[in-house]
Image (cartoon, rainbow, N blue to C red; front, side):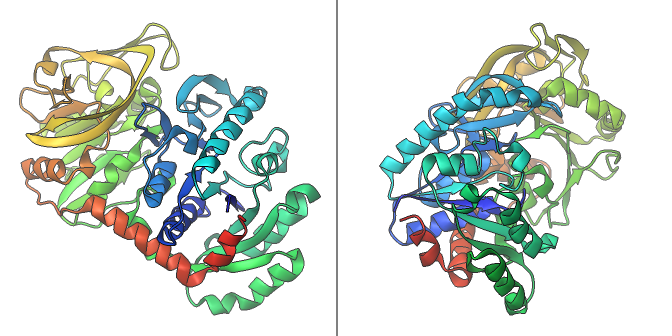
Length: 476
């Protein structure tokens, strides 16, 4: 075996979960398997052991394979900073910024890194399962493509096309993809599968046969909706979901460039927590116990966004009512008096006033800190990671949020406002229990074990509904 690639008829058709499930299924079959995504666009990043960045979805897929995340698993990561521009990460390291119109000029350099990383993975494993991005039917992007057919043809990797029946029009999705891609790209496709079916899959038998007849492609099966998906970390902001609990009301402000939002997944899983992902134009509810300002890829830009929603006024009222506030990474920076950016590292050079809820100031700098950390917080051992530009200091830092091992973050004099650069803390059962106990809520342990159990269940789900053996045989 070498590799097989799962491409989709569009974004959010379930490619990431399909690859994670297939990786776990291949591991159950005794194979050494690794995930790979040539290019990802996401502000939800994971930190590798060597201090690099990859997409959070590839970190989950690595976990499904029983591997440590590695920068070779996602060699190109685009982190959107504006509607038209992104920071470009190549093999784990930031190499600059690019506007959408200029990005194509980087493609040859990026493809070289993509193929280099893929070759290393393929040499080290029995099987590599590759995830595409978006859709190969976006033929306007086909020149210099490195995410879908451009990669598949350059690396000689066969493709299985996934369609999403839940959004409707899946027959047109698959047949239409074949109609618009060129013959050489179509020849890379070995078959298709249908994802996210609700109800009795046999009701789609006629549609399934029609796709086979129209395309000449082999069908690998129809995957019913996987009910356990909520137990796995969300990849996209559109997948953020409210908690199912009825107790402590936690409100997270959904910033326009929200980053590393899977920090909230463990809270969403808590029965004693009611998590609200607050959207633009919505007021912070008066019954909120805790308001979280999450990470963001554009601190100063999202601070302006926050103010445009009136959330600065709402936060002041929440504070007067005795409510608690937690800022994570960029959200922590917003809580201070001033954010200065002398070099334009966060966007435009200048200085803006913060929310003034912590007695600290932040200075942005081009140097990016990307590191895993261990230490203590609220008296509990913790593991987490930092991924940020800027340094924060001030009197409230004399009451640090954590020690990892150096002091991190700040706490207000009354203990109701906290800020930290640490991501991933809520995944730790001990820390989460101690933090929620301070707010009067009980915690249910076993979040990380639940993720692994969900991956096993996902693999079993795919084995039950797909011809997994036939799909993996495509890689031979």
